[in-house]
Length: 384
Image (cartoon, rainbow, N blue to C red; front, side, top):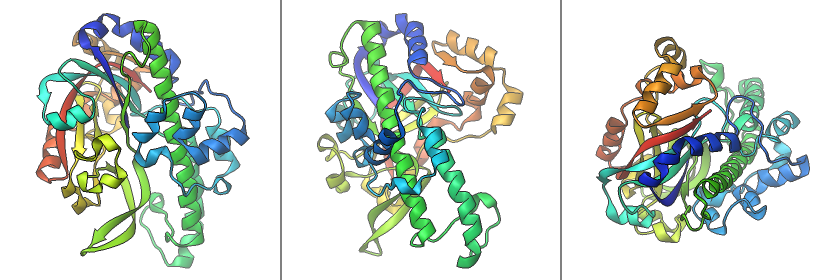
């Protein structure tokens, strides 16, 4: 997840929302199998796997300050390109700068009136008042990461017997972290994470280009700074206290995201050290999303929180119950312009297919692991 702020107000953006969303749809390819505009050879893709977001910034597709506002500075250091298959590399080569499909999206959002809950944190994140326009991006490592997962799933199924591991579902195939196979997978997964950081960085560059053209201002003039970029669905080596003793742990965040509080200030950008880490919690394209902040109470969950609202309805059920074309028309009447790759894809992502975002945020606050900063409502969406 990635959130980019602007100094634009909803009143100046709404008259151009269709033009803006359609231009973003053209500039940031979406959908199954979509290919990006960034054409590179395998040798340069090796750099992507190793450098992450910094690769894109070095190529002029970003600002130096962007890297400071990315989890782990947009690079997992354990990446080892020799642990990635040729098939995975072939799939990833032409997917940099693409959204993909499923629940991936690029959404233009507005700060809701009366919904800035933590003024100190909001100010630190550059959120100044109601009506302010921001852009949220949700996407990952595309087919590249998927292929890496597929490759190692097959390998783990073969080696589990020698480690005495039995499972009830093939999708749970695994190997001990310190085994040769476990280490190989972790190093390959780091390559996928770095590609995902680079992918979102290139998308950010495209977003700035589109906004600059539509509003005839530079991205700097529109204060299009990266608020934060935080990973979902990743395993990371981190230090946490267990029974009062600090240990290095492998923290799996599947359906979860990082939530460092102020006490983890050494690992936070300078501007966020006093308030904690921004958390970008996606809701649905109909109901809106939240910007939260991590708390020291999240130590109870190894500095982890929910990564989104979560589904209440399967994709198949959503397609049976919801007409995508009707949904698109209804959303436009309510001031949300969505441009998707298919009507079935829109049906899958209807608001009623997801949990109530307010209930989810309430539960996170009640647990003491995150705190509301600002509520966001959608006005435009590019849907994969």
